Length: 108
Image (cartoon, rainbow, N blue to C red; front, top):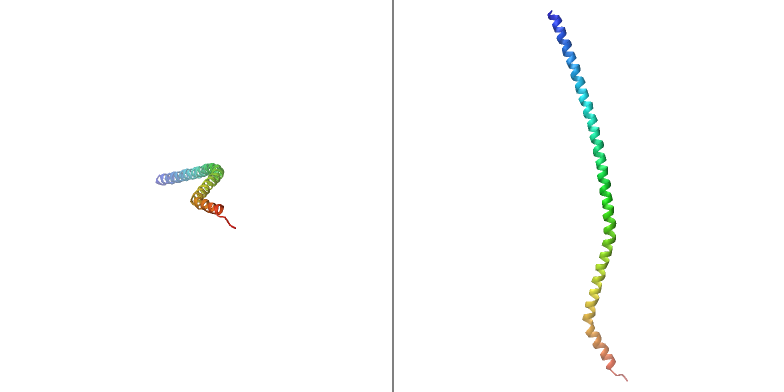
């Protein structure tokens, strides 16, 4: 009887081991499937995020490039006008004096 019981015990252990291997295999397959799903979801999110950033960047680039160029040109023009006004106001008395001296000087 002992041999019968030990045979059953070994058979039960083998069956339990096979069930454990089946459970482990199922868990590994489930984990692999879930990892693939997570990777696909992450790639989709990354692609969507990247396309949104690129669209936003292009929008900003087109807006800022034309606006910034116009603003920069306007600022440069205003600066040059102010510089010319200052220069004219400094030189104006000397020019007037020189013109008066030429007009009032009589040459023979």
